[in-house]
Image: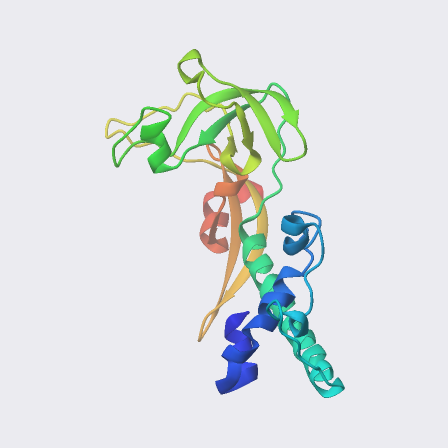
Amino acid sequence: MLRSCVIDFRGSWEDYLPLVEFAYNNNYQSSIQMAPYKTLYGRRCRTPTCWTKLGERRLVGPELISETEEKVKLIRGRLKEASDRQKSYANLKRREIEFSVGDFVFLKVSPWKKNLRFGQKGKLSPRFIGPYRVLKCVGQVAYQLELPPKLHRIHNVFHDSMLRHYLPVEEIELRPDLSFEEELVQILDRDIKVLRRKSVPLVKVLWHNHGSEEATWEPEEVTQQQYPHLF
């Protein structure tokens, strides 16, 4: 938002910082269901034309009021653009996740919390711990987990962004070199990758020992030769 204001107001952008502050403080926030200023003080923020110190009096003409309204309207538009841009970035990583009571999930922990709360440390320590059983749903985006006794000091309600589905893995037959053969089970989607001189048909495939979030794009011609029964 500040970057866009600098572009609009050029060299005098710092003179309009009070208007930026006013526009942000009175902007409705969906997370708190009201404006930030009203959350703190219980009332809406006064216009910058009233921001005078005690004992000061200043006459404000209609030209200044009209100019202030125009600048605030412009800043609010820039604020909405910045908010929409951040929302679009966040939506790229947002997934609709829903768990049921009795499901088993993995719990994601940050590196510093591993050592502080969960007793795990080291660069190669796992990013997820568990699995743990879901006891109940708390609201729309939080779940209560059944944690082991050693984690009794941890609050057992977590946001769904910290949880991942637990999929029981069947026993895998390993080769002598500890490798295994992966099997393709389903074609999820199709696409064409356009290069400079040719186009390559691709298929999005689901593998046997992986979930749909781990599906990969493979060349259609090679996949059809190896798995003709799926075409």
